[in-house]
Length: 244
Ligand code: SF4
Image (tube, rainbow, N blue to C red):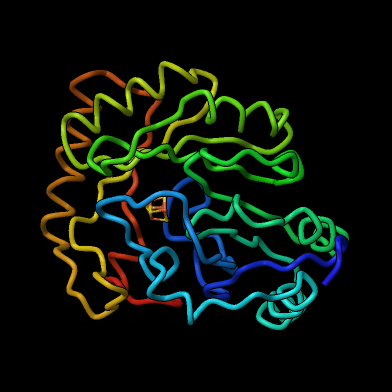
């Protein structure tokens, strides 16, 4: 592994499946999920890519090896590659973006906006997803702003906010006010995420749908017509299962 072929810490690579949420919902996608995160959100649904107890499942792979996996899964046919985690911004993705773009692939990255990278400007889609109060994390808005600056308006940039309750909703409104140029996607939180990586943990779909209805009512009541409210389609289809 060299500067042009840096190592990436990978939790899993899977697909093609559809993107289950946000601006790219429904789009066939290969996922590169990285291992490690600088946050510990109370309701994290990707603990297998965050908690150190799963480190033994993560693998340091060269950029070339990651790329070979993407090509094999997609049959060499260009598609959208989603860089997720964990916090994928921790990993050195610049060389992978160059390699993939040379072959016609596109790249989306979702991050909470705590780690800033110059290669954000080489993405096709940057999804900034600062975490609301229910996560028990504290947002560094200056860092989120710095992520935007690093992207230099080159990728499509959107905000995605998870909402569990009224204070999360107020936080989402504050985020929208801070970044009025950015399209905003609201997503009801899943209060039944897999615990300790147990993908068989049942999902309370009725509870999630009730939260979605409340969110739609709130947006309509407040005449917040710029917001888009979307469910997590993969949770509705497959619950907490991994690799789909
Ligand atoms: S930022 Fe995302 S991956 Fe990291 S702990 Fe929070 S929800 Fe989990």
